[in-house]
Image 1 (spheres, rainbow, N blue to C red):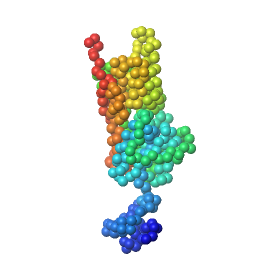
Image 2: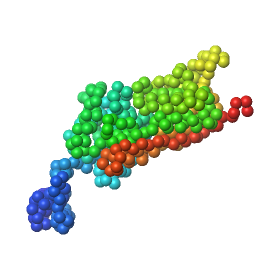
Image 3: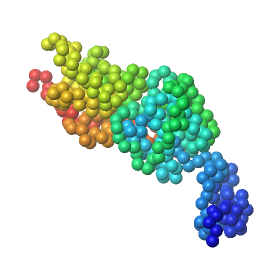
Image 4: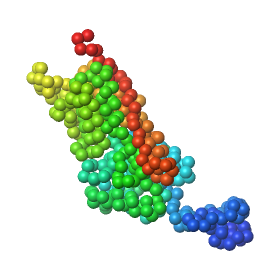
Amino acid sequence: MSDAPVTLSQVAREAGVSLATASRAINGSATRSVREDLRERVLEAARRLAYSPDPSAQAMARGRTTALGLVVHDIADPYFSTIAAGVARAAERAGLIVTLASTEHSSARELAFVELARRQRSRAIILAGGRLEPEGAGGSDGGSGADAPGAAGVSQTATSAADDAGPASEPGALEAALNAFQEAGGGVALVGQAIGGLPVVEIANADGAADLARALHEHGYRRFAVLAGPDGHRTAADRTAGFTAALAELGSPVAPDDVLTCPFTRDGGYTAMRDLIERADGATPGESTGRLPELVFAVNDVMAVGAMAAVRDAGLSVPDDVAVAGFDDIHTLRDVSPGLTTVRIPLAEVGELATELALGRGEQKRTAVRGEVVLRDSTPRRPAEGA
């Protein structure tokens, strides 16, 4: 028996059809279909001969591969890994394989991965990653920056394709590249905030933070500080604005000096919280701007975890000396003590929704997701004044 691989021509002869018909039956076609009885005859012949189709030939015939690209900022971040798990589930149902790329917060790498997906004829691409304001119409999603394993079942693409892309892309270049990818027949979806008119699963960051502020105010808290993330980061800015605006409406405005910028990471939260504690320690007794706030809101959970560590390292306690709240409800919070109050975003479901949008399913191009406030032991109800 020959060890040579079975060819498509042999399958066509076995099935008694033309080579073109056999190709359309096995590889598919962007323009022509095959009668069902002929298709079954070809597939049965292929099974008898143990024929393995050529993926490249299938991509050429169909116009697209079965790859779905997911581009995130940090594959170790539990925010992104949970979204990736949802994307992987939805992609598997659609018979697609997810390739995962990490930009490491470089807009040029992000653009390079979009171009790579276009050249490789990917079926669709999903972008989940925070953007800075100068990007213009860019979106953001809130990712956190903590260490966590990547989602199971998702392959990680080599990042060398974008290594020489430089530190930043031109404003508007990403939107143009995504529009070109879509016009060529690929599917596109974003997670976070919109870029132009492209399909997007929007996170209601400002609304969720406002809901949290109202819940904490109702719990008796009146003096707040905010660990606001980096300047210009759209998700951080939206969450900060939603939280502070709601408190101002309730008559408990946050002093400008109590809104601290810091990296969107655990260490950023730690350093900013340490600065708050040191400022309180050095204040003149009774000085209002120097007192430790009753509650510190970090605009994502890993910053909140860092803040809680800084409180412990200073010999203080959460929540006895200061309460702490976060945003996202990442899965690693199950190991945090005391349990962290936060805004729960259904991240896996967000990934599934984004996949459906990227594949052109559903009537709307925009889907909004609003988080749910989850009150835990890090923010117990405070007694009423004078009680």
